[in-house]
Length: 367
Image (cartoon, rainbow, N blue to C red; front, side, top):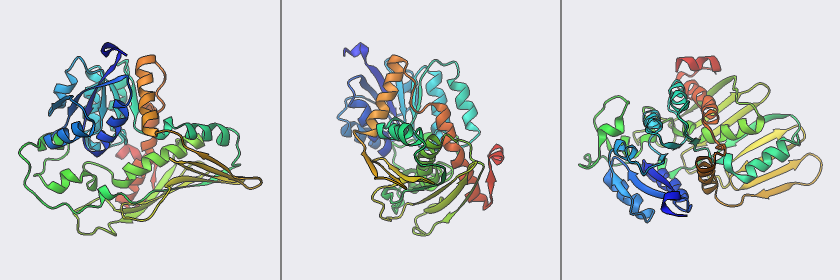
């Protein structure tokens, strides 16, 4: 492809996750990485090295969005900045790949929907299971064929996240880090290393494992079950393993989410609990399905088990799907509506955790 045929991409937010997704993008011949934007020069330079890129390095996202050679934005900033930067990206005429959770607060979904409506741009949410061939096969063959009978329980587990279990030593703010840009719409507080380096610890900036992990697994469960309408949620947990690292979000949590005629139970801890194959387990009256990123195993009550292995990279499949949508008009596999549906149970579970109460879908209006 010639340079004029490629999609010019801006990476906004070049931390661990942003760099990982950007690797999938730049592996596609249809992409030119035009700029790397981050509030901290060390992260920009680290990402450029990891991506073997000579893209421009930029501090202010406004400068990235003003570039005419940028057609699309990979937005991988902390959760509390998703709405502001997402709306600005769409207003600047850029197609948008936005990391999950799509928004940080439930009411923000309305603003983002309004920004997308009439923009003529593609928005892809970062729930990459939606582009996985084996997930799509399970949806068609197992659920389409009603091979599980009536599914009553769905169990989702995933633990062991070392990047969320670090003791961050306090240091002075680096001179080249723009703390005000990091805070954005959040309350103004003095710089603390832990707030920047481990922002997932704090509900001002992220929802912890409920937002990071439940978003993925609830999306899979709701998609397979054709039921994106949770009725109620409860959640319990706390700071059990890392009591002195400054975190406010729980390091360990369980949630039970009730749907019309099935329950989703979720458990997660950032602690190093061995979990070789984190998955979503569907338990039906005629069989079980253990569905993970590495493949799935279907065990019918009568008959032989079926094992299907994943092929290829979910990350590359999802970024390719986004590029197909931008270039060819194909529908994105994880559109805004699916991204909003995925955060509904998350928002309910978060409210249930913090209020120590049963939260119904109607209670979301108060978030």
